Amino acid sequence: MKFDIKFRPYISLVLFVLMGVLFLAGTRPAVALTLEDLMDSAMNNRALIKAYAAMLEKSEKEVTRTRGRFFPSIDFGYEYNHLDETGLSETDRDFGETSVSATWNLFAGFKDISDLNSAKKQRDINRYFLGGIQQDIRLDVALGFLGVFGAMADLEVAEDALSLYRTENRNVRLKYDVGLLKKNDWLKIKVEMDNALQEVHSSRARLAQEINNLSLKTVTRFNERDLVFDRFDRIPDLDDKTRCRMLLMENRSEIKALRARVEDYAARINSAKAGFYPKLNLISEYRCRDDSPNDSHFGDESRLQLQVSMNLFDGLQKNMALGKARLDVEKARFDLTELERQMNTRLDNLFLEFEVSLKNMEVARKSRIEAGENLRVTRLAFEKGMLTSADLLDSIYYLSRARFKLVDSRITLFRNHFHILRMIEAL
Image (cartoon, rainbow, N blue to C red; front, side):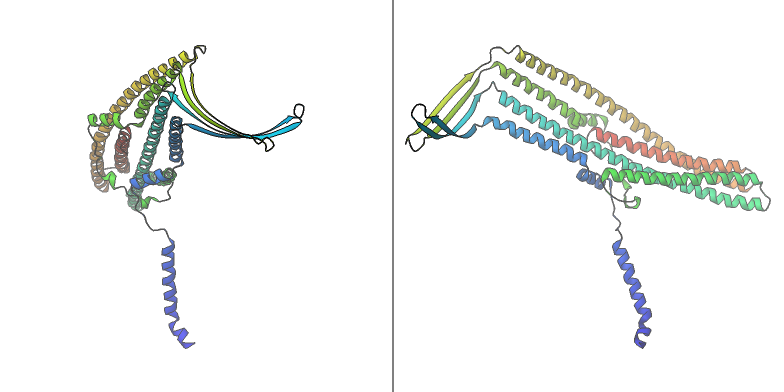
């Protein structure tokens, strides 16, 4: 008993340490998540990507199915017959017939080749669609990541503004208490401080919303401390517009899909032309008849056929199908030309917006420095009684506005950068 009392403080300390270790072990460790990590998570977990991947797999199977036309078709059959001939020979006959046939199309006006080419192009189109939706999701994640960064920066500005108002509120309240300032001087700052507090509350809510939205897009749970934003510390690198225009024409999924669509419709023209050609089939058939034991008769039959058929008139259906296929090709080419023009114009506009955002960011950086200096000078003048509390409030407001403008210009710069990368499919 004396031993237990003597070591009881040490036992309590050990238990406390063990509880702390268990608590830390049960908490989620901090994870550094970059934009690339979040994009990869979205690529692996988004159901939308899996749906487009299923479409691609479906088109792969269609290619395999279409390729099967180049192989012969083999069929097996068996018939069992009971023949009642009592009126003629007063006997019944039971017999079975086994048949095996192979049919091989030798010529169909190149329709099989054209249909296979069409199926391959449709597979390529679905592959481009999958690539396009992947780029769209990566852009969506990048913009969501940027949204979290912007919300955190806005919250920091709002909290700093609130801290400034609280500091000045204490100073002005002291001067009011000793009769150096009027009450309305203090109340002005108090009102602005309350407004700044509301801005902090709104900024925190917006940050939580941005995190929830990004979590939805990436199918990942995290908090703002897990994210790494170092990529936003420097001006983004970007190829020149000529290079980006070339990459746009080479990489853009929608453009490649329309090009494949033109080739698909061209293959359908050849498939429609097949109706004007004869069809040639080779048929081999083997039949074995097993008569009833009463007749003791067995018969085998082998047959080899070469079938040639050709449609001479079908109410101009073949002509209309061919004309429709040609119009499909023509329309797809027009759509491709229009899409290329739209994409090029969009790229030009994005470069203009990117250049403007670069200039605005530089202006906002200088404005922030000037606003900070203005607050310092105004505060000194206010302490000496040369300026009023309204001037002090204005200087705090100007500093906060300059900092918000700097955040906004940086967000706009990177938003345009991400959109340009999406245009050339480089995300």
